[in-house]
Length: 167
Length: 272
Image (cartoon, rainbow over all chains, first blue to last red):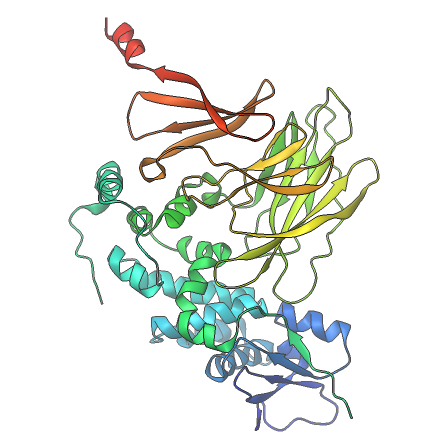
């Protein structure tokens, strides 16, 4: 399957590249959008071939990243419009989706998207319980109860009145 | 026709990503830092309780720094860099305060794709032996969710170039805050119970060294450093006024207790 990006069918003049997700979906992306990813840019500089396989990004996540890259590569859009696109882009996304996205920004090295997604994740996390964070990041509690109590005691001010959420 | 595919190097499989994106995010310190940096301070303080790794990341003073940072220092030389946690290709320079010179180090070949990425830069400089210095760069290749394969590269101010050194080593280490002693750079892993390593600049070997024989659970603070040609480790437990000073044997066989320090006596003197 080849899906064109949002800018419609590509003319012969405009260079493009095919990016394949780990589950086999292929995306046709303009080169101007692809090079906003530092990793893709490096590959394109070094090799002539136009098919890039991403072995650790699934199609859903890749489609999102490509939509982001294509919007940011569009010279017709003002910076203000791009900023509001960024806000829209992460709003309402679940934490799970954001985790895949932030990993994809790491693989593809898309710094500005990484910052946007990281900010959204932090906004979701800020009023959550420690237990929620452990669950979401699949982290084992490696403290003894004594050590845990000691850390709480030393930073007691951070544990005051606040109503913390667990979902 | 054979069609060559460019594949961005990734050491994890699709299945791994499906099942443990959370673990992977949490295991990439740089990525985690980007998220943590954007939390309000109160949340950040609470999240020290998530795990020892989080506690370490959040408590590290370097976590808060922006702009130019001092990556390392050794016997009067400073290794500085432009600070951007996610930039693989930042500029490093060595500042000598006595001559006011700051030569820029040649760029490293960091390869393509996501990794390898620079995990630590350390200076090795002993003006008593030579006015030339070396810089040890540790690059890590992500192997799986928690493991990295590390490789060292050494810059010599004498030759003005980088050279790859020794065999790659698989471990889980934090390569910030290296300590130069005994002709080697040493990395200790604050309370996380991970490996401690050292890189001998003479024979260019990366080796594991013992961790101090202490209870990691109750460590809030520690000191790890060199003094008068001895390598020391001091643990500081909570607000206790008693602590032990450990020293590493020159053959790396063990940490032994050098001093038991009890500041209660001092307290008594002050209060009198």
